[in-house]
Image (cartoon, rainbow, N blue to C red; front, side, top):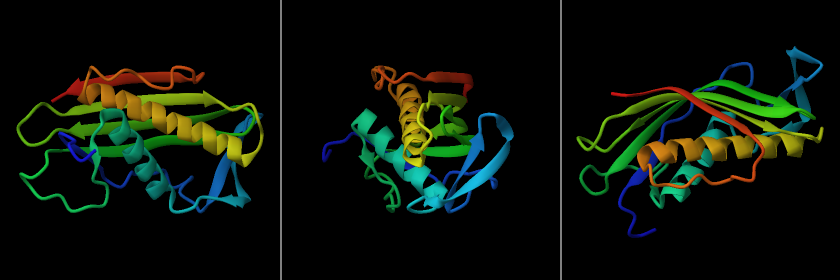
Length: 176
């Protein structure tokens, strides 16, 4: 990693207020319009931090880049891709699925290439009804989102997690 050609840095993700709680907020598949808290199951940190750190870790690993999350970046020393994430939907449905719908932007190091803005929806089946299973499903969704981003930064990156049974739809992708 010491010879990484560039770094990645993710701004603090925007999260819907309805799920931005210490406890896991889940939906009942029989009544998806109803959300309730699993008071005995809590995130280790803020949901925004958990998503940002996971996405940064997976994206840097996919690209062989340096993860400069939460580090000051000195201009001209290391080219850095800046990533912004706006979570539109973050659903945990025990016994059904974990869904992540995100609008994201990739800003390349100054003057190198065009920026990307895309929307990706990932849905991972979750057969078990326990908290650990839906959290694992959401981690898989974040990994798959990182794959989509990595392929925009470096089209030669081969998609990982091909064994994961998931629906990944990236749409409305535009370069500016």
